[in-house]
Image (cartoon, rainbow, N blue to C red; front, side):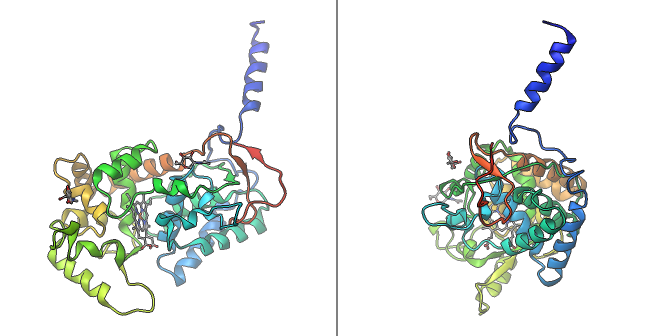
Length: 333
Ligand code: HEM
Ligand SMILES: *[C@@H]1O[C@H](CO)[C@@H](O)[C@H](O)[C@H]1NC(C)=O
Ligand SMILES: *[C@@H]1O[C@H](CO)[C@@H](O)[C@H](O)[C@H]1NC(C)=O
């Protein structure tokens, strides 16, 4: 009683009782089980970028949409199984989301090198880092050790913000996840690459908010460029680059665009143009200082990547990111 030895036993016992999701994520999580993981992912993402210049954008968006629904647990990747899995991919905010094929390629490569070890949730997290890095953005060490859930939460996709959301709504949805105004502005900086379908901003071009006029916070020259892009007949739905200046580079141009009223979505421009908003000064700071943006982006990505599933959800390292494992051998988070 009270001896150092007894104290040590209690500490060890307490550590053993930690369930996987309560355990802290660690950059060394795969240091012995899959030390080559970053290189495997780097190869597949670099290869994907050769034929698809939106590959990086698609991957980081998947990670964001994963983390905002029941935490970062790979739940977004589960496909529909009637009566069993109500896929998040059928939730309106995930309509038309892309990049799952790239995730499958990464997973296949990782499985052949380190079978049954690396979760799909971790693959999304590290793929996002490598996507940002390969696009000219910062490099950081990603905390790892997430598990994949055995359930999806389609109704939970209403946690995701929409393109016509006002700043109040954006802030609330981020605050619900423990993310503040600075995180909101920094993470929105991911709209420095990738594209949006015209249907998400076309209301801003003509009849904004039922006013019969364009969005007054949209630069008229940019507006005409967008009109041209969206009028082009294509086999697929027309899309516009989020960043007209450096569409595939991860840089601070997104913020300079906002300052010159060239944000693509209403939700982007709100960050700068909402009167008396605390976010305006943050946008100006990042527009002036790429190092400040990169530094905060890394912090906010780690914070978002730490979002945990609710307690009690069955978890595992999924072998196929699209489906739960057949064998019911899993832990409870
Ligand atoms: C702040 C609220 C946000 C809203 C309202 C929003 C909304 C959207 C919308 C409507 C699209 C276009 C989807 C399509 O055309 O199918 C999009 C694309 C994208 N989003 Fe967001 N987003 C937000 C935050 C984020 C965050 C936090 C990230 C990542 C950290 C992110 C990363 C991306 C990327 C990279 C794309 C382009 C994907 C592609 O080219 O396929 N977004 N977003
Ligand atoms: C689904 O997500 C919602 C919103 O975050 C949450 O309230 C609910 O508890 C979740 N359901 C499950 C089964 O995890
Ligand atoms: C849209 O119009 C409503 C009603 O006139 C107004 O309350 C709201 O602030 C407007 N939203 C934007 C983003 O201008």
